[in-house]
Image (cartoon, rainbow over all chains, first blue to last red; front, side, top):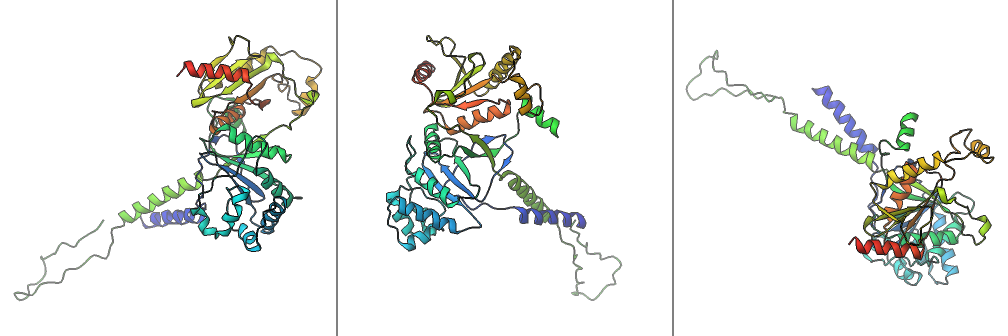
Length: 202
Length: 203
C-alpha cells in the first residue's frame, strides 16, 4: 500500500508542476473546435480577439523582446497624432489588450494596468475597410519587421461573421493573407477521409 | 485499516480496585481518505493539462484583385456552393444557382458532410485526363490520384447572420473531407434573397 501511495503522489506532484495555468483572460472567449493539429505560437504574434458581442481587441504577444511594445505605441501615436505622454506610452507594455478607439486610448492608458479590467472597453472600431484596427496591425507589422510575425484570430463561437470579415479586411489592407484561427482541439470524425489518413499514418 | 487494541483483560494480573490499565493506542493512521483525495487531484490535473492546449487553424486568403485574368476559374460542373445563414442554417447548390432557385437545397451541419463527399465522388467519377495532370502529379509528389479531384471547388458564403463558429466549422469540414480547393466569398444579393426566403418559410 505505501509504495502505491508514494507513486500516486509522485504522479500528482508531476502534474501539478507540469500544468501551466493560463493567466485569467480579461475577455471571456469560447473558441470553436477544429481538427487542426498545429500548435499555437506564444510569442512573435499579434492576437486579435473577437468576443461574443462582436467587440474587437488587439494584443501584441512578445515575451522576449519588450521593446516592440514601445515601437508599436510610438508608431500609432505618431501616425494617428494621439499626443500620448511618455508615462502613457510606458504603460502600454503592461496593457494586456486594447479594446478602445484611438479617441479613448489616452483614457485607457491613464489607468494602471491592474485597473484596466474595471474599465468597460467598447472594442476597437472595425468596418468593411478595416477601421482603427488597420493602424494597429500596421504598427505591429513595422515593429516586427524582419522577424516572422503571426496573426492570431481568437473569435467567440457566437460572434457574427461580418465582424470576422471586417477583421480580415483590416489585415488584408496591410497585405497580410495568412492567419491562424485559435480553436480548441477535436478528433477527426470516424469514417471521413482525414480520419482514415491519420489512422494510416499512426 | 484502523486497528484498535481491544482491551485484553485476559491474562493481565489483577491490580487493586480502582487501578485501570492504560490502553495501548495504535500508531497506524487510516490513509484511505488521503489516497482518495490524492487520486481525485491526479484526475483533475490530468484533465486540465491535456485540455488546455489550444490549436491554430491556418487560413489563407487570396489577395483582392480587380484583374479578371488573375482570378482562379472554377468549372461549373465541379463547384459546390455552401451558404451559411441564421440559426446554424446551411444551404447549398451545385454549379450555378438557377434563376428560379430550383437547385437550391437546405441542409444542416450533420448532413452537409455527406453532400460534400457525394459531390467529390461525382467529380472524381467524371474526371477526364488532360495535359495539365502531370503538372499536378509533380506538385503532389507523383500521387496519381491528386489530379482526379482538381475540378472540385467548394465556395463558402456566410451571410451576416452566420456565426463565427459556423464559419470555422465549415472551414474545418474542408480539412476533414480533404477538399483541396475552397474559397470564402461574400454572398451575392441573389443568393441572399433566396436564403432569406427559405429562412422565412422555415420559421
